[in-house]
Length: 151
Image (tube, rainbow, N blue to C red; front, side, top):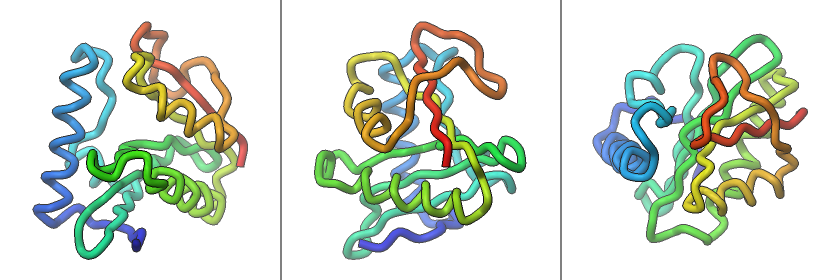
């Protein structure tokens, strides 16, 4: 498996992210969906990685610069057929190392509060993320959970 910075120009990653958005919209009320679309992920403050195995996209993740020291983890996803196979852990480990290398000292995230998101929350806990108050432009929302960790 290779984890590479992705310019989001290929149809395979576009389809992968479209599935992500559709899934988030099917689980979470529209006002509580904070997943970025392709245009949002192509912004200069975002670095996006895809995980590929045999040429297929099997996972992705991104960081969005909030300020010089703080970034937000975005768009973490593993292909349905590959869930619980360690891809998310490899991606998260890679992204944390990259964020440190860039010079960020804090990494935060928003994820869902629904039972569907429990495996993601457990993953983030294993990587040292703790629960926190909303950050950046987020507000309290019963459908959202906020987590952060120092790097």
